[in-house]
Image 1 (cartoon, chains in turn cyan, purple):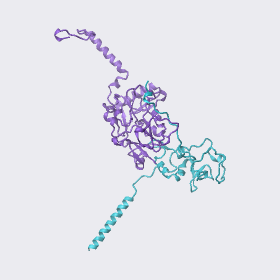
Image 2: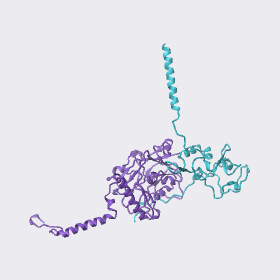
Image 3: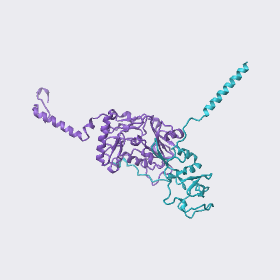
Image 4: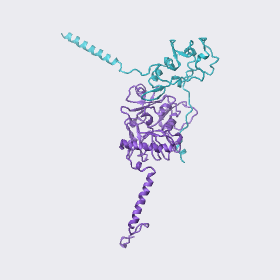
Length: 175
Length: 309
């Protein structure tokens, strides 16, 4: 009898424990991030004047061997240059689009999906507006800036800027 | 001079005998006329009106309309003066990412242009960017606001822009002897420039140096004047009143981002509704390392600094 009671008590405790863990592991209810890839409003990518569409020059698949380029000499490539080169991001089959690591094409206007493959933490922050900039309405329609609007994709480190003039000292303001 | 002499002395200009009634009437009318003339410069109506918070809706409408007329004429363009009240269910919060700010001062000048500050003599900036040593951390004793550089960020330094922190427990509001400054329901601390007496008590009470005084008639070129104004925000100020950041009340009450948020090239500035769990500022507060400036003073700012990395 006593043993039975003990057994029952143990079962109860176990059930309670299970219920407790189940409750704790349940994620807090959250509406999904409002921005799905391809649906948000973003600034156009900052192409060099006259360079797009790339198929003006690049017709059909090109040479896949890694080499220095004869034409795009204005591009200083500093984006993990040791391991990466053009065709890691640019599509060889269609130069007017980019491609993900699995080969799926990505238009230039959605380049953030490509960037997000390596920079997942930044992509996550960017989608909820913590990384990068948005303009427009804080309570409504806003325009995003693509990664490439602020970071040159070939040399992504944020470049130093010339600061605006320093404020006047009080003694300089006397009439 | 002794009393017992029995001589009554009077001021030299006034005769001892009362003036004749006709002359007394004339003097009375003239004095009243002079007073009216003196007051009509700023408008009798304005001079005798109540403080902004005691005005009826009709009064506000009338005052705003007269301001619009006056400023449109003065600056030669259509000036609008809004008096949009705070929205229910909104509490503004501001986030500044210290790991992103590069100290370029774009925000300082975007603010000046948006909010019609005096350009020079006096030069008024609502945002001050402090340059600090990375080795020292946030250390006001070694902060430099007048830094000049070819390029920023300078190696070994970080930058901390400071503006009104829109405290929940604002010392500036407490000390105002005439209650010309107060905290609005959405959290913005505002000033009624027509009620401010220019005593500058609030400036000495503010631990952030966020309040600024118009020591002289503000210089605001008509072509640079921003005609989209709010009564409690960026309408042109007279000489002798205090002014401060209002989270761009004329923009944010209309749903827009503040000017400093939109101009920041590093995306270091975040703004939104603290009561909306999906807003950027809430995401910042829930996922990043956040602090408030001079927390020990218990001012409880609605302005948060954070590190995204």
